[in-house]
Image (cartoon, rainbow, N blue to C red; front, side, top):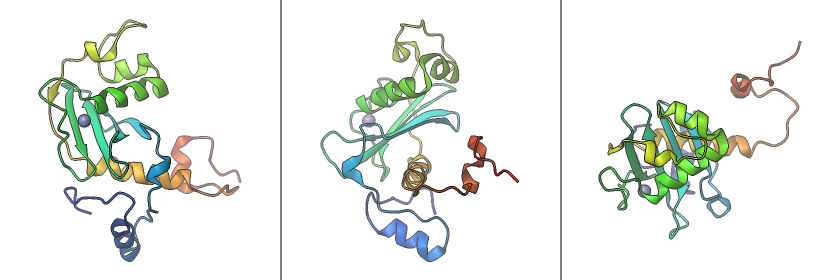
Length: 173
Ligand SMILES: [Zn+2]
C-alpha cells in the first residue's frame, strides 16, 4: 500500500483491498467503542498515537512527537493536516497523546525516549523544544488497525506467531 493513500475509517475499501491481495486482514474498526487515545507507542523514533476526534466520531487524528528534534505532527488518518497545530505549539491531540503515553509507559520512560529531563512531577510538554514537522499518518494508522485486529482475536491456546516478540508467548515443545 502506498504511504500517501488515504485509509478509510470503518469503511470496507481498505479491508477489501487487503483481502483481495491476500496480505493483511483488517476488520472494520468499531469507532463508537474507541477510547479518547486508543493507541499510543514509542516506535520509529517517535512517540506516536491515534487520538479520536472530539467532534466527529468517524475521524481520528494521528499525532506524533519525534525523539530527535521534537518535530510535531498531527493529521487525520486521511492525511489532512490538523487545523489546531500551528508552529511549535502542540495541539490538544498531541497533548492527549503524550498524556496517554505517560500513563501507559511512565513519565521517566517517555522523557528518556524524547531525550529530555523532566522532574518526577514536572510537565513533559514544557521540557520539549518542538517545531512543526508533518509526517505521513498512514504507517502509524495501519499499525493501529493491526493492534485492533489483535484485540479482536478470540481466546486461543495456540501461540500467535506474530506475538512472539512480546515474550512469554513462545511455544513450548
Ligand atoms: Zn491535532
